[in-house]
Amino acid sequence: MSKKHQYESGKFYWAFLHPKYWGIWIAIVFLMILAILPWAIQHRLATLLGHLAFNGLKSRRETTIRNLEVCFPEWSAEQVLENSKQVFVDQMIGVFETLNAWYSPQWFKDRVTIEGLEHIHQAKADGKGMLLLGTHSTMLDAGGYLCAQFFEPDVVYRPQNNPLLDMLIYRCRATIYKAQIDHDDMRGLIRHLKDGDAIWYSPDQDFGLKQGVMAPFFGVEAATVTAHRRLLKISKAVAIPLYFYRHGDIRNPKYHVLIEPAVEPMPSEDELADAIRVNKIIENQLRIAPTQYMWFHRRFKTRPEGYDKIY
Image 1 (cartoon, rainbow, N blue to C red):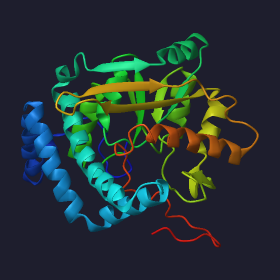
Image 2 (image 1 turned 135 degrees about the vertical axis):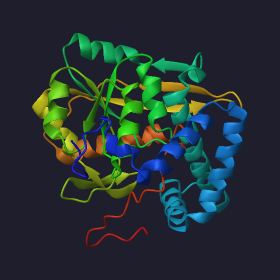
Image 3 (image 1 turned 120 degrees about the vertical axis):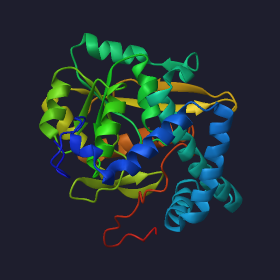
Image 4 (image 1 turned 90 degrees about the vertical axis):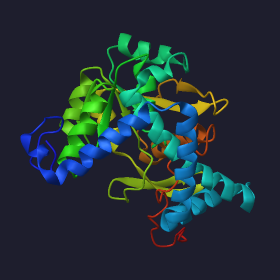
């Protein structure tokens, strides 16, 4: 149950018919209509909305530009600007891809390939749970849907503050994921891992040093979470890198799921070494499709004494 409100995630309550929720119901109907539009129209709308977001969201725009300047020093100022704009476009494309996954999944038929599925099968054969180390992709739940075509993933999620929105998103995700685990439910997360589940987990954001260590990310020291080490140790699960991305002609896109061999040993006796390895895995993933990542998060916001400020 969410700590944000008293309602249970995924459950309908008659209170949701109160007039204060009517705006959300109308918005949901509108989004369902968007999901059945031809891809050509969805793409044009996403491009327009992406440009509007880039121009209108000053703080997010500046953070994105700064992140790309820091992580891709080989890019010129023009390349940084163009790729920053594309991050916002890809985010909006990801919204439409997620709507398609929720309401019009047949759109993905014959568009998805996978590499490395044998690593999932091997972990299952060994009776191991799997912590799938991924990223905060702009594809959102569309990525989960791609994975669900080949195996049953779980997802760690943060309940929405609005209970109706939380119920609607939870139900949409229920068609994709085997289980949805509240990010505060560590016991539930460990239980699912012990049961042999494959859980999509993204250790790629800055949560300060109470939950991690400083480790290089694209050559720059960044606060790196290490909670997954404890999860792996307690559950005896394996850490398997997972990445998915869009490629090919945007007018007729294809999607690829990349699963890499389990990281061994993980956890090791060295917390910093583990953080460095995980950051390098994520870095290599992001270099495949750099703009399909949420660069508008302040990845380098934690700067201990002696470290230069990034933002």
